[in-house]
Image (cartoon, rainbow, N blue to C red):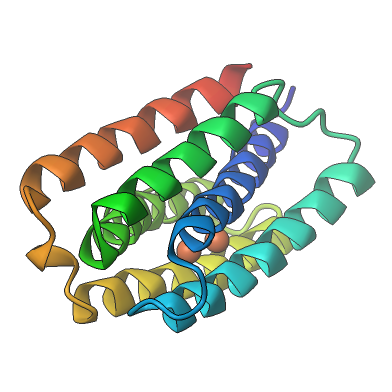
Length: 169
Ligand SMILES: [Fe+2]
Ligand SMILES: [Fe+2]
């Protein structure tokens, strides 16, 4: 397993998880709740990120994470749970995840430098989208969610753990 294969594996896992979080949120909120339209738009971008990493992982013969079923369930549950708390908590979830993913992608880009320009270009493009998602979530009132600091930090920690696990397993 090369360094770049490991990066690709963890990133594919993350984009898959993102699609599951938004699926969980939309399952609870439907398409008429406040922020449903924003969530649906972000979900569509995540599906695009996921498709591109799926294609690259297949083309390069990288084994996807064995934890996919876990991320599928955990992502959906996180999305549904935050949406049940309310639309602002759903936005707090996005703010937390995307803060962590911005950090993660930026770290990877530093590590990649000018090696593997194909992967780097994808990561850079997706990172810019994730930053927009974070800013949109904050603009939509993420910080007004109940117990925002606790929620924000707990989700960030969970996201970090998922990254660490997907790297190895
Ligand atoms: Fe994404
Ligand atoms: Fe995102």
